[in-house]
Length: 257
Ligand code: A2P
Image (cartoon, rainbow, N blue to C red; front, top):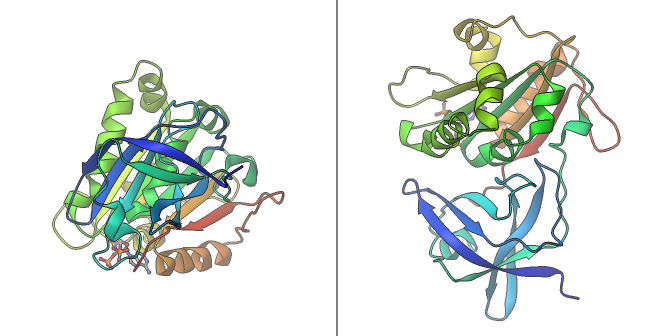
């Protein structure tokens, strides 16, 4: 048995010069937990060329979705960005990762902190009814340099707000906070600064960070993750892992530079 499923590309959307997303068929045998990643890629010169990608689709969905950057000289993304409907992609059979709700201690507010394509695992998790069962409120934060880079997340949330099942859940529980660092926008600043200054919680009319209630997942640039980890650890939060739940869990966004 091959280590990969061969899936058909169903649609591709280019969001900016550096961001695109695509949907593909999903083998009925491919199982994953929302928030996990798998090895995804293309066959190049008869060999698999793969990178880790978080599933942006939820595990109840029939199709797979991925959200990717484009790197002009990136070994995979320079080619992957040119895929079209009908092309074949490879999907590793085994999904894994730490951004799963079982890796968090019980709590009442879930902070999903992302930059760039680090939004992808949270796109999956905000489509998971179990997340809304476990937490009273979910704060989805997406930080980007430019406003145009927020579009994928903006559309995701707008679509879910219009959804028959998720609309009422989002209305009751989801707070979406897009923020931009390099041009004007209604929310400005780095996630780290927005947390240390309490601006994030003030803007959302939410209580301040509290280890008794807050559980955190983060995915994005390595520098941001390192700073956030230190910030939370200084306040007593402990990192969770598979089979060892904690107050926060981390996954770096799988970027190709
Ligand atoms: P900034 O514009 O101030 O660098 P990138 O595209 O480099 O991955 O960055 C995505 C977003 O993450 C940008 O808004 C960027 O802000 C922010 N960012 C980069 N490094 C850090 C960090 N160490 N802590 C918090 N945010 C960061």
